[in-house]
Amino acid sequence: MSCYVLISVLYLLILISAYFFLRSIIGYGYGMLPPPSKTIEDIDKLKNYYDSDKFKDKTSEEKKLLVNSHLTKFFKEYYIEATEINIKNNNKRSNYLYLAQATLTIAIIVLLLILPPFSIKLVNYQKNISRNKESISMPNDEKKPESNQVEKDPASTNVTDAPTKTPLDIVKESEDKPMERKDKK
Image 1 (spheres, rainbow, N blue to C red):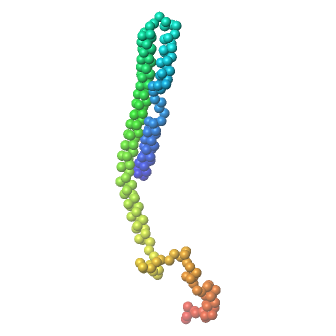
Image 2 (cartoon, one colour; image 1 turned 180 degrees about the vertical axis):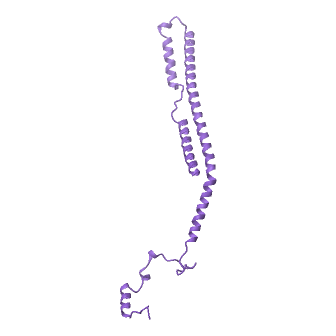
């Protein structure tokens, strides 16, 4: 009985481990930097913005510094945001992987606890089957086939193996012979 409980616990642990493993893989969106084409597009927009009438009083060097400081701030924010998202996701994933590993380890321990009793039951079952085969024997009047003879399958009888007398022949023979009395006085 306890062996079946442990087998149920083993299956449950394997399912839980599979759940944790799948949770560590599925459902995460990572923060990424924008593609280079978008970055170039943003740089062009910044240059056009600083070239507008609002910044006519600025020199070209000052405009370049403003564009660079704005891009630096922009990329820092992107890096910070993406890194925070990735750290949270990686922490969740590593936690789920840890739980999957822990439940799988427990499942292996349960499996090792199940193996000895299960093996003993299997050996005893095989011994019982061999004892039952030995206790079933053929009646004495039937002969066992010798090792060099092939045992015939009753389902595969040929026409040549059929008896030469039909039941009707046997009845006719018995009518021809006088009946013998068994209770002779």
